[in-house]
Length: 164
Image 1: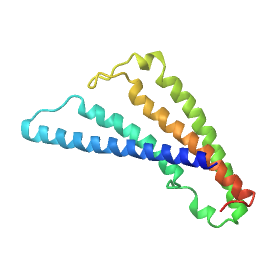
Image 2: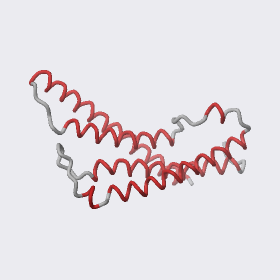
Image 3: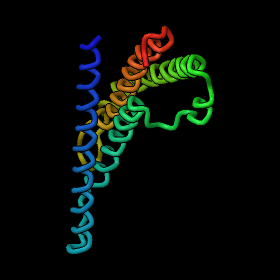
Image 4: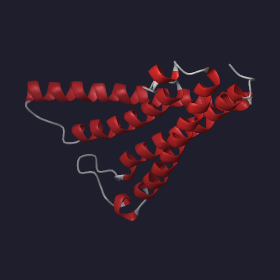
């Protein structure tokens, strides 16, 4: 199981690094865009598109990593009042609902991202396939699914009395 923990940690570090790089690029593009508009009265046609597309990637990847780290709002007020076993069973139920939802959304996202209509569509400003921006959603949902499956390891060991 240590190998799985190391793999999950590696995926999480890579996801955080990707989100951080995208945030840095977004910041630089916004500064360049504001400066060029203010000083030269010109605008880059691709800047707004790039920022929007990266925002989608950051939102889905960052959301998945935050879910893994337990940083999302998660019925804390209710969960903290439950006995430990009941709390863990409730978390198992919630994790299962999230997994089913994210698995379905991943499937639909995959179908949409790689559909012919999206793959042949080109972004106006960046001149890239629209599959690239859509893939951020698919990747984020894949991470949600991976982290949901990983949560089962922790939750089941807690139920069996071998965990935290």
